[in-house]
Image 1 (cartoon, helix red, strand yellow):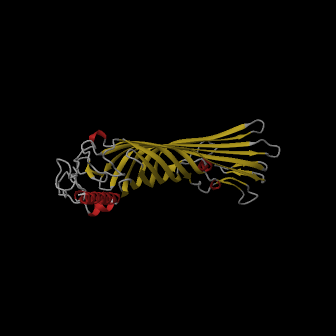
Image 2: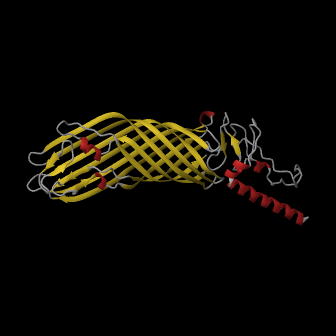
Length: 398
């Protein structure tokens, strides 16, 4: 009797291990071993219905020792409370029109809200080649926009998702991130006389100078998207997005022979608001881990503007200004890969790598060649800016 009971326990243990292993490799199981009848709203994968798990034969209401454990598949709109026996890895319908959701780390029908908090670590690409200040007496000497390397900066990343909003198969997600401390500086000595500041037309400055230049950039993004399943591993994303790109360039020319210092500043601002759409694809969807690739494209109305000023501190001090403001069309493209690991039922850790490009924006170095201090006008809004970097978040689901 003891031997028989031990054998039954061993069979149960082996069956449990087999089921967990199959769950971890759920992608293959979904593609190869899932069968359901056409039009059937209640279905489970074959590997679950063929489970070797057996019920306890010692109970008063137990079935035969070889009968499988009953797993009740959930129907459309089901919740965890409706299906308490649902194992992780089961396939559930959660909405009408065949919008299905795999109950795994990528998509769990038990979740109603998901909140995320974390950080982004982003690299801002170097500006394009463009002369800013040059010394005609020494070809190649001077300051160029491509000399600046804004490098890496960290920022805040917050998110909130409402799953199955309005009792539908659509999720609503909100995301905010902000990086505001990209900066780089350059110092050099230019001995030519005169020196050239590459405005339009060019500005000439007398005497050799010590040049100190500081370049900074800031990016902020807020988006609200709807996400809807359009396939077993594909989700359609569409929504609104607002972004701010602000840049500053400060140039100070000092130590001139018997003349005052020169201060030249540029402020370029972009306010982009528009629509975006994209796809999210599940590359790996296991019980406790999820890997997704996504791509998004957006079209925006950009309120771009710039203000430039040049002050000569020779007595009397004189200031010249140029500014411009214009509505234009801008675009964005973004793609990335994210990996999520379930730490416990309600807590997950997510990491990712992302690339974001903006086209049709105003940058600070780009304004010099368009700033006309004689007319007081000028604006360049056709630059492209690239960002790439990593993200790390904690996700709380309930």
